[in-house]
Length: 419
Image (cartoon, rainbow, N blue to C red; front, side, top):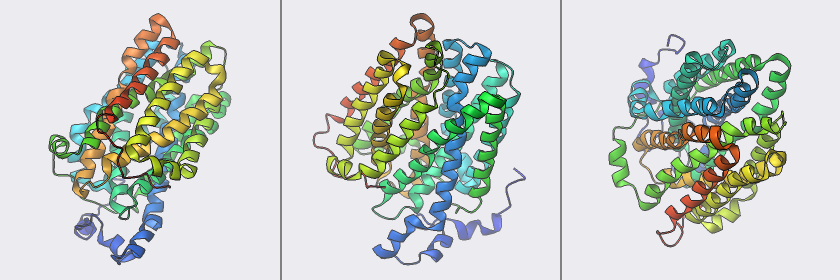
């Protein structure tokens, strides 16, 4: 951790106040009126945070091509590919109880820096791996720890610097910065890997993660949470208690697409999968920007319900229609993703006390990856039945999760603000 500057002398002045903001931010935007608070969202601090999220997105999205690398270069079976994906998720789940102590000790800024440095080392080291084995599993597990730290600290910082009434907009912009890299990273890394090998692409992902660590140095430090996930869950409203299992199910569906799309395409003689990721990203960003009024009218609960049905339908459609139609399927997948996840995150974080955000962010990430661990089972199933049944089953589970929002009656009156 020697690369992280000693800031102990400044910690007292950097701690968040009652409003969850550091004195440094309050000096930039000292007013408490709605006009000055509205400017917060576009402050230099928030822009820097968006830049770090973009670095996170690029590094993580580059590894969407890892299943293709395993299948094409190491002749990995679906079971092995599912195990590699599952180990990454298992690591995210296992580290949830340790997130709060880590962030309490380091603060959000230092936690981000530490997470990005670990991401950088792991990504670059993948260039040295020569096959599926203990070295690969160890690196993937370490990546899981790193991304979990970055995700939790980043989400907590976004909710801390967001102006009153603009949390869902801030969440949408933060997610968009990361999501945009889902198109950029495969578009850059796939042809790079085809020409120079996947090792070159992984080193690039490590360099971008290192840039994320550098950009994180200018962010404020905020306090960690001092309450347990059980306490927060007991105090949660019905919307939040509905979101938690839905996050696990959607994580399972998302990981089925990310882990098995490339091997599925290779079995059909399709070498390039970047078209899916590009169309998926364009649609997801588009629905966040252009679909704001539509989701405002629906409300968060109804947006989440319809998003789940569409999300599950397109996952099943990938298996039924085949990878030859991956560009239009990617577009519809992006529409569903762009509407669903901001609604779920807004339901989870809106109205949450600032000191509770790190625990809730860690809990959300842990549940997403708990669902993603289903890659172990889906990989084993694909070994025996092929990929079609895996996509259909995962899609059906995601669509069925919409039932979690039905018993609550009328949709939430809170809305997803247009990014």
